[in-house]
Amino acid sequence: MLTVTRASLLSLRAALLRSGDPQSAVTLQEAGYAGGATLYESFKGWLAERSEIGIEDLDVEAFQHRASEYFSDHGWGTLHVGSIDDVVATLDSPDWGECDPNLGAQQPSCHLTTGMFADLFGRLAGAPVAVLEVECRSAGHERCRFLVGSPDVMDAVYEEMGRGTEYEAAVRKQT
Image (cartoon, rainbow, N blue to C red):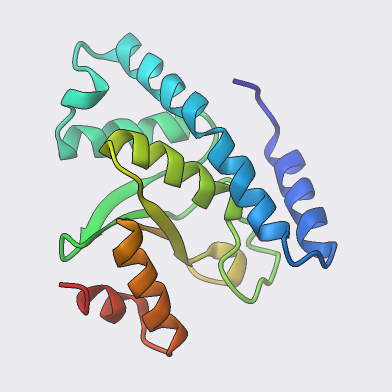
């Protein structure tokens, strides 16, 4: 693991997004995804130092607590894990490290995080997952909110949102 300051991450992200390259968001997602394996091993090692319970044996409540503690300890911010109708997991943060509340973005833009979470939570689930950020402090929301679910469900949610359906209603249509 390499420590990069929040200011450096925000500067790099801003430069990529400002470049006008339509692939900049994808580039950030790919970079996040590429780091997922190392992040998983880091979380696993961090957990082993603090608990006799292995990563695969954490119940939902313990996982929520430990994941929030891990990300906070590593400078990413507070993370609250929940769900919408047991269809998708939600990851909420009022202080996520990738966001820039002064950015004035038109849409959620924690792209590095979506890639990172896709790999990390796919490893934890033992199956591929997709991640979609639906609220972002960079876009004026009070929190960053990521939805995590199967690729099929997340594709359907994304399609519904593209038709103007609010994300919670789009998720509920998947039940």
